[in-house]
Image (cartoon, rainbow, N blue to C red):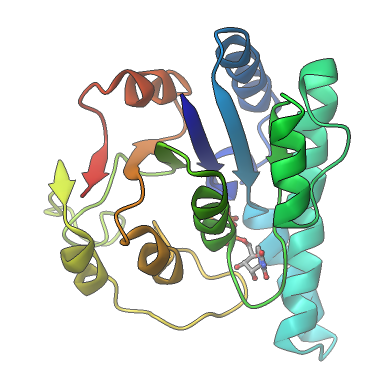
Length: 224
Ligand code: UTP
């Protein structure tokens, strides 16, 4: 299967979890040897947000804040690539074209952000469009999508399925800001809602959830 895996910085990078990074790398190697094609997009998590804070304190504009956060996400992608060895692409893709090239070379593609003014969710959605992926998995810090923020409301209810239209109503913040944390960026939703791919949101602290999503088993929230 050809799939795109978006790993939240909130999962592997907040704080940095080398054991989890290693487990993901082993899982990716296993999936590759089983014949799956995968592009992984990693965010910068708390470290990226810390650097965004520093950039703000220095009086730098949003664009510069984003640039700094992109660099952090690429450091995490670099760690993954080093750990994947020969199975990973030679260098981190800096453009969507690089991503396609790496995939065609039969390598596991791992990348961070691409350009200011977007999030890694949107990067992942753009990759999905470009490579005709069959599945998009977001590994995040929650069990799925809830009717309200589960960190603020104990009575929040998780959806097993949700439509793209309903999802856009769940979001209260729609505009890009450096470091914004949402379960799935509305800009990405706008691309993914074209119905090009199956979208599953899972708890990323358990890499095995990726396997379950690939097998089509009931896990997290599926967006239809
Ligand atoms: P994300 O917010 O997408 O990554 O990128 P994350 O840490 O994985 O987020 P969670 O865990 O899903 O919340 C961090 C920041 O990097 C900048 C943005 O400021 C973004 O909020 N960024 C990332 C870009 O400007 N362009 C990109 O292509 C990617």
